[in-house]
Amino acid sequence: MLTVAEIAQRLARSQEQIRRYLREGKLRGQRIGNQWFMDAADLPLTAALLQPERTKVLQERWKLFQRVNRRREKLRRRWEKMGIQVDVVKLLRELREER
Image 1 (spheres, rainbow, N blue to C red):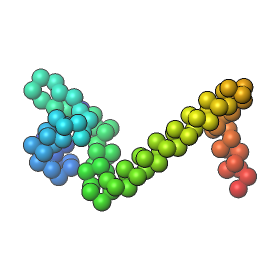
Image 2: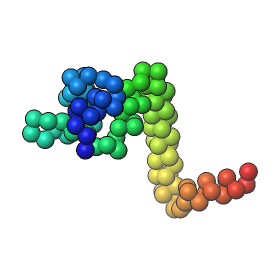
Image 3: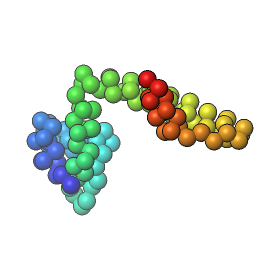
């Protein structure tokens, strides 16, 4: 777990700005007593999200991921109704091997 001071130093932001992001939910962390903490594993993603030039790219990728996920779920339900069992991972491996 990282403290606000450690997060601020690693992200080159002020401690107050990090606290504000945590309060607003822009950063994922947890409050224990009067102090905020963040899991060290979340830091690389956090750093990427705070870079303005990358934010738009990440948002577009997230939207694409959500669209693909919705489409996949629709297909899964349709196949389930027809009694078709599909192992997507196996199918993708077979497609890659064909190339």
